[in-house]
Length: 274
Image (tube, rainbow, N blue to C red; front, top):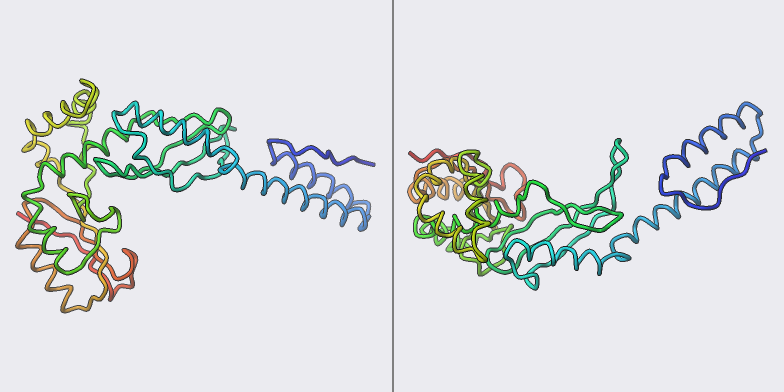
């Protein structure tokens, strides 16, 4: 004789282990009726737990939004410019720790999107490596190189190619970089960012070190979506990019409908401009 607890525990794995254990015992006794009942009860408990986890985002949205607003404000951004477009359910790791993802866009200046981590118990946002600083830096750095990049931006725009990672109207289109991760400058740029009450120190740091940063930026990405593309058009675009792009290495991905288009509907190439 056994009793199935009615309360839904936070550690749902214990339930499944419990049900599995009791099921094995019942199998040994060939008590099919009780085993079927156990499976039904397990399915009901699993369904309740699934629904509870599915309600996590909506049930906590107001508190999560407030914590995200407080978080971005600490990094000299206007919290009113933040758009939270998705909140994931908590994920449990083998260590027993849990976290959930918060997908945000900063619609102000500079524009960027990122994934923050949250604690399901406190709903506080954490991001110990402060990648948000690197994202802010990278967008402002690209803007500092706007005159160099403008011919390429204008050319791609003339072909009605859209940037899948930015909204219309941002100064920089198509170009993405991760140069802020470079060990040679990472600590310095974070120090510049944290100086003063606004982004002026960071902008000054970029201006003073633009040549060095550009030399480190050897893996720039160019992303775009185009309505139609055949081999002839793809070759024409690639040839023109080689003429327009400043010295660096580029990963170019331009596809029809998405960056994951079929092979004959996309440009997916690596350009070295010397």
